[in-house]
Length: 408
Length: 194
Image 1 (cartoon, chains in turn blue, green):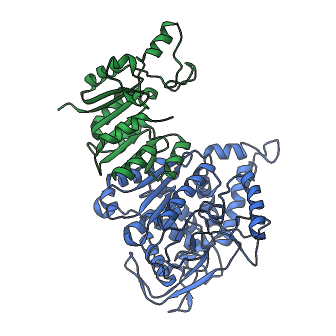
Image 2 (tube, each protein chain N blue to C red):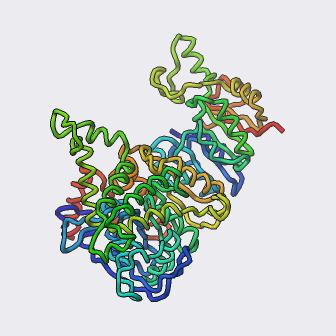
Image 3 (spheres, rainbow over the protein chains, first blue to last red):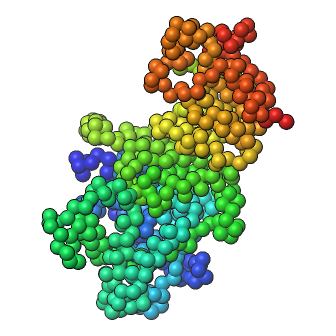
């Protein structure tokens, strides 16, 4: 393992936590009981002060870093961010990844068996909001014996959860990383989400959400939803650079078969996704995005809402992100400043669009690392034990360091 | 570079003041002020490396363009707005001065004095000055709006700034005799004319 990437947290073991205490949802319904699947990396210190919670976005899950023992190719979705020598270093921090309720990777969701009926929930699964997730995550923290988190980090929908943490539990979070997010979705974003949902619900295999009983999956709808989403997560420049107008053959076929490389790519991505992801989860996640609007109850007065937050904020956006553009992040920053909150804001020059929050970018990762170092000194976790390694040269140096350390 | 203007600025800022530092660089001024004076503040910086350095100094840094970024802040929301050795590199100097007066109860501006005798001598000899204070060649300088202490006084009048204190320093010492000739760094403290 360490020969491949000395910065990996190694083999991660998913764990389960069952909750019998009912979860009263914002939608008015109640989830009688539920399970959360999660992974942890690093060690919780004696003071239990070094925990960082990672919140996932639309299609994410609890497998944030490292690999699974039975499948070394299954690398966590934010592995470049978490590990020894990475921005969030597991030498000093205890990092938790959790699959949200409503998900399809092990936590209770629409595909889970409803104990009341013995059948999958399907359409009966209630809509879950960002606020509900944060409450369920807080209960997991109770279970792990963590009263106060050193940080909550997330991008996109995950960033919204980080923000919500500062509002729902202001005394339980020291710092929030709100990355490529928004205080509420734009009209355009809601529009994209609805097209995605319509693609799913109009698939004949959707069966009103009860497709499990019909042993069917609305793969065509889910594929279309993903294809649309995928376009919006990338920048136009990146698409042009990656695919241009490249075609499979030099001559046009003058038919409706796959010709352009971009068509082939999107269909492949869509098919792949439709095989592993749950359509009801996709619907639920997009609705959770649409409903998120913490300032709604104050008539849009975001500074007034954020006034109750006590956390420090790290806000970042990416210049080429047009789904959650820098303007949306600046709205958050402006409100935080108006509310006298501690905030750092960076606008990262990255060409990849919304997906940039998941990708390697030196400036971005150095900033997160520097901010994490500040948190470390706040909780007296000391300096980094493994040097930060972001570039190839540093990685090589680190391999040497690793060998040295293993030798001592 | 030793920043003699920082000492003077620090002496003007009261305990626990709210401070906005425009073009905060590596954040050392704000970090120092928060350590010694317990100030709460934000720095604005556009340069990636400076933003990172500011985070490393534990400063609340906001990456933005000064020429447009002050719209983030409400009227009179800071006790002090500081523009330290950045004025000369701004496009819309007058606009930024007006924004400083809007956002802050007081403003502090420091800038290299183009009227300093060495600079005048260079120009007399037919060359753009290159000095410790102005280290760039004319063709690659970020300094597009150089001015003298007298010029800045005129701008203060134009934008409605009342000068509360005005020092010209050189080598860390205040110059009182012929300051616009003998001083290389202008330091002004002002507020909106009542």
